[in-house]
Image (cartoon, rainbow, N blue to C red):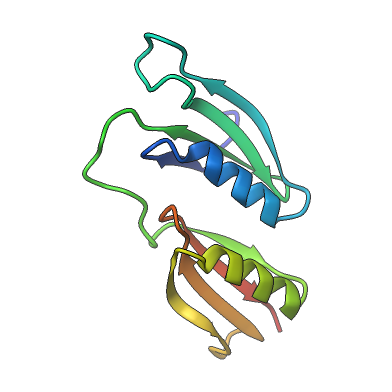
Length: 132
């Protein structure tokens, strides 16, 4: 076994938009590779056939699905982010929550200084934590 990589499947051609958004929010993050569908291929021309990006050194893969599935992302799998400051946590939470849905609003739930859990505008679930 070589490695294990989280994989995100986007619908409606949102993979590249989501990658750009995520890498703009988190320092030391980048889109590392994009392969796009060309003319007369199985996906919409220009959408993401396969891509990789990193968030603070953690690699992810993603695609734009060319099939309209009856499922999407679920909060039972989330991206857990440990923040260094309250300002950092508040900023990332606010940006991810724009067009999204708060599952657990920012607060003190007893297990850390501050915590929030949201689904972003793409349906991806995020837990943001400021440890004690």
